[in-house]
Image (cartoon, rainbow, N blue to C red; front, side, top):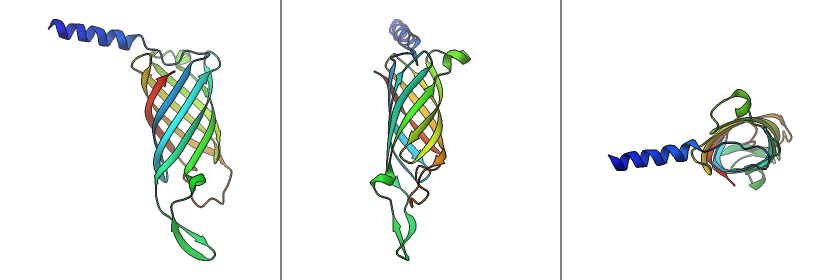
Length: 170
C-alpha cells in the first residue's frame, strides 16, 4: 500500500508540472504517422516560439505506402505509385497557440495555423498534450486551400491529411 501511494505521488508530481507551450524560444519536435488521402507515411515537425502565443516552424512528410493510381502517358494507360517529388512534402508553418486565450489546462496546446509547402497552401489545426515537461502526444489535421500544380498525376497531398505522434520539448 505504501509503495502504491509513493508511485501515485510521483506520477501526479511528474504529470502536474508539464506545460505545453512556453512562448518565446520554446521548441517542439513532433515525430509521427501521416494519414493522407492516397497513402500513409512518416511526419516530422519542428516549431519555435516567437512570442507568447506565436510560433513558426517546418514540417516534412514522406509517404511510404501509397495507393496505385491509373494514369495516361503517351496515350497509354499505366499504373504507378508516384515518384519521390510526389511522395514528399516540406512545409513552412505559422501557428497561433490558443491555450492561454481559451483558458485550458496548461498541459494542453491548441493551435490553428497556416502552411505553405511544395504542393499547396493550406491550413491546419492541432493539439498537443504533454504528460511531462519533455514528452507528449500530438494530433494535427490539415486541408489545402490552394493547389499549385494541377497536372500532378499523384496528388496525395491535395486533400485531407491527418498526423498523429509524439511531441518532444527541446
